[in-house]
Length: 225
Image (cartoon, rainbow, N blue to C red; front, side, top):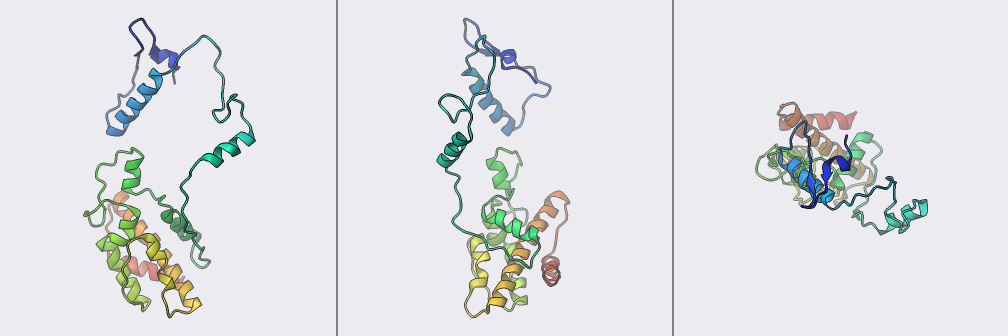
């Protein structure tokens, strides 16, 4: 830990930085963060006064609950219009996973890359043909589509064409299904998505390649239980 005054040196020739690294930044993400930090510090004006906390949400710098409420109301959080109905008969972890997936909050390779986390290759671990996004993992990847074909045969449903994860979660709304059957299929779909993501993690972290028949069998077992 160090003070800004320890790093920032003011002189007649302009500001300069006095960095003392234990480990110099080397990766792309670290270098980008270093550039942002250097630019931010270069704009700092030091004085001899005592440091104090100031709340930027208020013109006077005073913190208040009302000020926080007003600040939050001005922020565009980019919420989704889609509301996920909880499925009561599947494990909570499947419901929570599906909710996060529909909000695009899964740590896919492209999502990590957007957060400046250096992961190298952003291609799909299953097919290595497209970048790994939420929609690709569950709807665009050939491996995942083969899993869906097995699940559809098990549920006695016709093949379907989807372009996003929302299309998958809406599959139970097809015509000709009773309310009970729709609820069952909705739970099976959630379970299948969760199992596909687990297979993805096993390949990345455990170097374990799952077969389609194994994933389909696991979905059947979890659904029956």
